[in-house]
Image 1 (tube, rainbow, N blue to C red):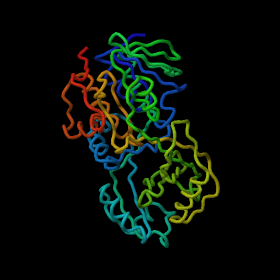
Image 2: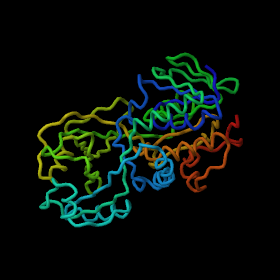
Image 3: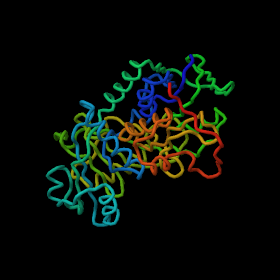
Image 4: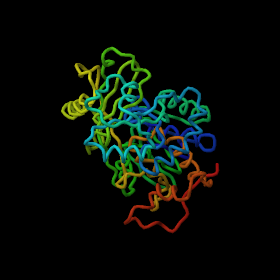
Length: 372
C-alpha cells in the first residue's frame, strides 16, 4: 500500500484526521486492535463541556462547537452539577470559576439529583452548557466520511517496523507493507513507542489510568435527566448512562501503555467518596473498566510536524478530552499538513506545537506539507 499519509492509531484523533485529509490526499490508517476506538476513545465519559480542560483544550473545544451543533444527533443535553462539602470550599471555588458554573442552593441541587445528601452537600454550582456526546455515532460518521473519500482504514494492523528511505516511510504491519510520504503519530498511549520505532526522539508522554464503575440506577430512580455530577477538586464524578450510573474515582495513576483495567482498591475508594455525598449506598456493580488518559509533560496537546523530522507529524496528548476537542484539533492538523493557514489563533498553534519542547533544536528546512 502506498499513500501520501499514513496515520497510526484508530482512535478519535486518527479517525477524525483521516476524514479531514481524505478529500485531498491518499490516506492509510492503521489500528492494531480488532476494532477502532478500542482503548481510550472507547472508554470515555463522553461529555462535551467546552470549558473543561487545559487552556489549549478549552480553545479547541470552543472552536469545535459549530461542528457539534451541526452534527445531527451527536449532542444531547446533560448539564453539569458540582457539589462539595464545607471543607472543599477552596477547590469548589476554583473549579466553579474555571468551568463557568453558577452557584445554586443545596435544595436546588437536591431537586436535580434526589439522592444527594443535604447533610453532606454544603456547596453546589451548575451549568446547563454540557452535552452528552454520542461517541459511536461520531466515530462512525468520521469512518464513513473518510472511506467515502477513498481513505483505507485497517484494523488488525499492528506496526512492527518503521524505516525511512528514499524520502518515504516504509512500515511493516500485520496488514502488509505500507509506504507514505508523511507519518502521523496518533497512537494514543503508544505515541512515544511509535516515535522510537521511527527513529524520532520521544517527547515524554505519560499514560494515566482512570477507573470506572457502572452501577444500577440508585434507588431504581429514573436517572435519565440528571446532570453529570462532579465532586469538588474532581475527587469523583458520576454520569447517567443508559438507565444506569457510571461513577469514577477520577484517579490519575501513571502507568505504561497497556489494555487498562480498573484497580479494585482505587475504585472502592472513589465509590466511598461518592457515597459520602448521597443517600443511596452502593450495593453492587454492573461492570467496571479503565482507560488511559495520555498527557505530554506540560499536559497540553501536541499537534504539528516534528522539528527534527518534518515528515513525522504528532497528534497526541489529548488527555481524556479527545472527543470534545477533535473537530477543531483535526482541522488544525489537516491545515498544517496541507499547508493552509489555520483558522485558530497563532498563539494556540504555537502552544500545541512539538517545537515547544526544549533540547530539540529545530531543523533549518520547511515543514513538509502537501497540496495534493
